[in-house]
Each structure stands twice: as structure tokens, then as C-alpha cells.
Image (cartoon, rainbow, N blue to C red; front, side, top):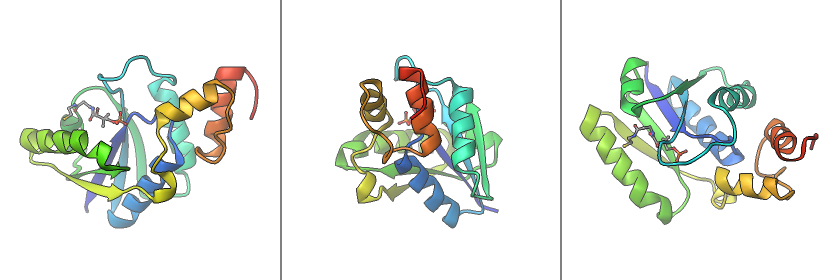
Length: 162
Ligand code: PNS
């Protein structure tokens, strides 16, 4: 039974994240999506629990997925939950340096390997931070995030629906 971990801040989950999660779910028996507070990032928009709820809703069609949130070291969480692989999406070369460094650190700390999936080109420009910024100023993010996330963003920034 091979379990993979898809970690991230998911603040909020985008269609790019969802694509990586769906593709990971095809390759592993089970997938744990770990919503983690990134200590390198300042204030988050959504609480961990809200991010977890949104992820649960948008992955409801997948049967081998579990969503959890976690504060602490990723490798401790991975060991605790029997995950033997970490899976991350790579959007562009600019992601590579930092992702490689984290993969090597996680390998050194725990022996757990990281596997990279190339982000689909249609999502390579997408990031949660840009989505937050576009939504904050009233831009249309409906082609970048699942509908429930677009709704939550609109509520958060403009106090309304879509
Ligand atoms: O979506 P993000 O913010 O790019 O995800 C980064 C994340 C949360 C996966 C990374 O910051 C992480 O693993 N944080 C947990 C703390 C940890 O284990 N740090 C050491 C990483 S080598």
C-alpha cells in the first residue's frame, strides 16, 4: 500500500493544485493532502481548517484521498502517517532551486524521497498568492480556482457571492 503526501499551504487551493492531486491519486494507492502553515510566509488568508474544508470539497470525487492539516515538520507528519513519498508540482525552472533544496533536506532528515510532477502548461502561471491578489482587487479568478473557492474569495474580499 503506497501512500503519497501532497503538502502545501493551499491558501487557497487552485486548479493547478487540484491537477497535481488528481494525477498523484492515479499513481499511488492513497494520497494524504497535508495543509501546512508555511513558516516562511506571513499572514495567511484562510485558516488551516477552512483550507482543509475547501480541499475536501474539491477532491470529493477522489476515493483514495485524505485531507489533513499539520503544524511542524513535514517529515514527522509523513512518518506518523506512513507516507513513503512526497509529491510536488513543478511549474517552472524558478520553482526548482527551492524545491530541490527542500527535497534534499527532507531526504536527509527522514530518507523519504520527493517526486516531482510537471504542472500542466495551462496552469504554469498560477499561484495562490497571485490568485489572492487578483481576487482582492476584483479580478475574475473563475478559470483559476474551483467554483467554491471563487465564492469563498469573493465573500472574503467583497462580502458577496461570485
Ligand atoms: O505551498 P507551499 O507554501 O509552497 O508549501 C511549502 C511547504 C508547506 C510544503 C513547506 O514549507 C513545508 O514542508 N513546510 C513544513 C515545515 C518543514 O518541514 N520545513 C522543512 C522543509 S525542508
